[in-house]
Length: 387
Image (cartoon, rainbow, N blue to C red; front, side, top):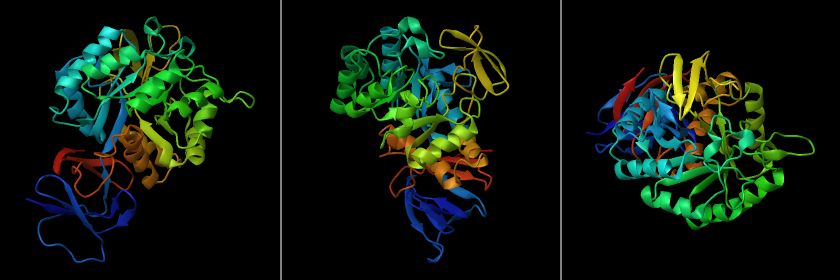
C-alpha cells in the first residue's frame, strides 16, 4: 500500500523543498512530490514534523565494517556489511578492495559477480579496485609487493569474472601504460578511473585526466602535494575542471580548514564524500587487520602498527561525514547531502539508480534531524533502521 511522507524539508535532486508531501508507492518506489501549497493528499501520511528527508547515502570507497573486509572474499561477510551500512545512512555502495595478487582480486570479482543483488541491506552497485597499480612512495596502508604497471589483459579478466561489475579503479598516474589503460577502461568500457596513491607530476595527472580518468582518490591523502612551482596531484585535483574529488571528512585525514578550501574551489558539485572505512567500522577500539597489515584503532583513527603509524583507512561513517562538513562550516546541509549521495553516485556512473530522490526510483531515503544526525533509514520504502 502506498503512503506519503510529510516533513519540514525534502532534499530533492534539483531543489530543496520546504514542507509538502512525498509519495512512496506500493512497490517501494518514489512517486510524486506535492508542494506545501498543493492539496494535501488522501491516504496514509507519515508525519516527520520538523525532520528532513534526504536520499540514501552512497559510499563508493569502503573496505570493511563490523569486523569484515572485502578482501576476506566472504559473501556472508559482505551481506553483514550491507545490513550494517543502513545504520550509517548508506543505502548503496561499492565494495572496495586493497592491492593484492591477480588471483586474490579475481576471486573477489567472482564472488561479488555471482552474488550481487542478493544482499538484503545497502545495495551493491559495483566493485571499486583501490590498486594494485600504485607507486611505493605514496603506498599508504597498501602492500607494495603487489604494485605493478596497469595491465589491460588483467583488467579484462577481472571484468569478465565480475560480470561487468568492476565499476571503478584507483591507480597511480605515473605508472607505465597508465594512459592507454585509462583509454581502455574509461573510454572503451565506460567505467571510472580515479588517480591516487601517486607521486605524479601535475602534467602526468593531467594527461591521465585527458585520457578519460575522471576522479581523484581520497584527495590530499597519499598523493604528491601542492607546491607553487610543482602543483602535483593535489594541484591537479584542485585545478582541473569537471573532475570529481573523493574526500574523507573525519577530521583526521584532512584538516577541516583544508576541506573548506577544497569545497570553495571545486564546489560541492565535484566533491564525493567517502569513508575509506576498514573492518573496525562500527566496532570497539582495539587491534584489527587491514588486508595483511596489523592495525590499531584508537582515538577515532585506524593506524598501522608498524613504525610509520600511517593512517590505515578510517572508521568513519558516512552519516557523520555529512554532519561534520556542516558542523565545520565547510558546506550547507544541502551541499553536504549532495556530496554524500548524488556526487558519489554520479562520479561512479551509478547515478541512474541511486543518489537522488526521483519518481520511479527505489525509495531509499533517510530521515535526518535538523542537526544533520541520522534518525531513520528506509530501503525500498520500508523503515530498516531507527537511531
